[in-house]
Length: 482
Ligand SMILES: Cc1ncc(COP(=O)(O)O)c(C=O)c1O
Image (cartoon, rainbow, N blue to C red; front, side, top):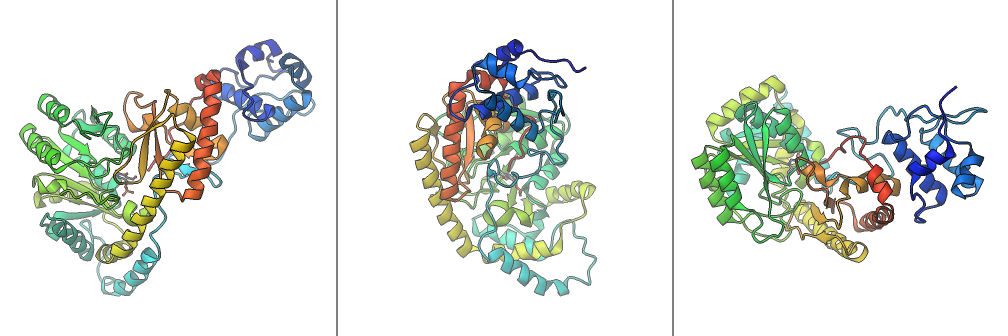
């Protein structure tokens, strides 16, 4: 016979489960589920009978029946024909938070900061690309450096931005994440230090760790003036001599900050004297919501390695990014790249070249939409979550919020119950930092942001009234983030 849990023991574990913010059966089922997930109720034990538990809790039997039914439905209780159900863990073929997957249908996704394809432009660019394809079909189709038309378009973009660039300085990649992995493989050996802003982009942190490097975090100041602590970065570089620094000076992810030209100049100078290669991720540079004018980091030193991507300005489905560097480095990057893959798909590159050459109108429309979304999100947060401190982003796609208590992970675990998927603050840092922070993207339209922020309010209320819940909530696995 399976071991069983008596009502008194369960009562003790449940603590103050009934906060009154949801129907009692939901709250009871939620807390039991979390206790099972947390290992505090062991697997394969029989829960008390409905009658005994209802009596001990002082609730109606219907409440317990409904709670058990909900647990069964979610896969946390066996069907238990004739006998009492036993605790178990659901087996899903595709877990909701599997790395690399966006939110399942029905959830509002605030973990991905990404937009649908910009208007008709992307579709049109693919149609045009197909008309250019026949000219390339006689070739082998392998091109580790990238299709010439795209390298020329990217180089011209840099030149127009004030940094004269030849197509031979551009290596086309399958997105910025691929570019960063190529750069890490080339420039940073195992155990080398890589300096990062803290917080920073989670997938970059994962790539740095996966390359066997040591992350050297330098905190961004709590306030925005100055937005970067350049003195701390200069000291870290001169004392710790990191092999490279991964930085997002152009609408930093997650804060949306922009680095001033003065700060760029100081950093470039300090990196040169420390022997640190500055690797600058410009994926979000095009999302300049307030029209702030700055020079690209590569304008301050020819040794800067720039990474770019069309994922945020155009569409992540293009899977097209690049590295800009001096020609010798590009040759080393190509050698590193061919260990992983032998080139990108040709039609995507032709479409990307089209988009870069003719994208000003759809980008203007995208910026207008993002400004509107940003305004809506800031207003909604002020209205529904006034205790959250919100930093006004100058560009990019996200707002970085300081929470009144260290509950970011708990909110993230709870939020799907209220229809929202989040990425917890600690994903953006090392050593468990940023439990006090949450990144909220403004990539959803205002009507959906309204629903999402109200859901966050309900989740925050639930946590505020149930310290027990906050302690028991642990993530299954880190959420996929972009
Ligand atoms: C700063 C930054 N770098 C890189 C990426 C990923 O870019 P890609 O889709 O081109 O790999 C993102 C996506 O969110 C990002 O915010």
